[in-house]
Amino acid sequence: MNSPRRPALEGTVAVRGDRRLSFAEYGSTHGPAVVWMHGTPGARRQIPIEAREYAASNGLRLIGIDRPGIGSSTSHLYPDIADWTQDLAIFADTLGIDTMRLIGLSGGGPYVLAAAHALPDRVHAVGVLGGVAPAVGPEAAVGGLVRLAAHVAPLIAAGRIPISVAMTQAVRLARPLGGPILDLYAAVQPAGDKALLARPEFKAMFLDDLLNGARLQSSAPLNDMVLFTRDWGFRVADIDVPVRWWHGDADHIVPFEHGEHVVDLIQDATLTPIDGESHLGGLSIAREVLGILMALGSDTGEVAEATS
Image (cartoon, rainbow, N blue to C red; front, side, top):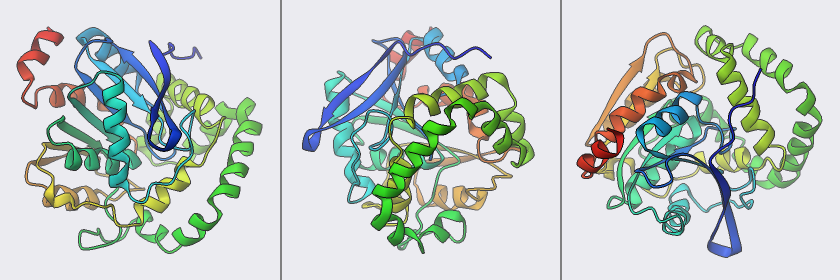
């Protein structure tokens, strides 16, 4: 199995508190920007090959960002998810990005929703692929694994540093067995995810992302679990930016009803079921997602010119 082509650019950007966020960039360095927020777990290279090819052929600037505690991003626990948007604004300023669209897979969903809320003048649209819903507060969804995780979140918060050290060591030891381990994981997944993980290009992408992100540190998934089970620091119902949500109707990790719940809260939002797909189904429709998002926003004329 061939490894995916390396990003056109990788590096880190200084943000608040003497911290850094690492990133990987694909496609055009001067085109309209799309920020891709990885799932939980995941890192900056967790972007489908089809999305990278679409960006290259359509003049888009596609950027994956490592959350704090994965890759080369400084480990840090935000007080809430809303707070990360201040780092995003600095990140965008540093890379010369005035406006952007964002896509969030699973655990990346809350982060792109936070950006839509905090930066409506800079965010033209967001896409969510099987995203996590609020677990506490007046907008909380009922049921689901994240809601259950709220009961153990205090323990995770107290022990996240030693747990993350142990997880990082485990990933390093497992590196030579990455392929068989991914096959074992796929074998116990529902039909949709099993079929996707059997595709060579997706398997290569996941392995490349794991070995270039989690091998350095692994506290980001723990930070996510703590933040998902806190108040997010904003109300989803206050989002004015267009939100387009795709969700597998057989999702076994984030219930399809959670997608319905969040979309019903947002003024300009639509939900598209992905028939027969489970949690990772959104990765298989990356071209469709990018095409729809690029048609939204006040710069659609500029985007049409860039993608022609």
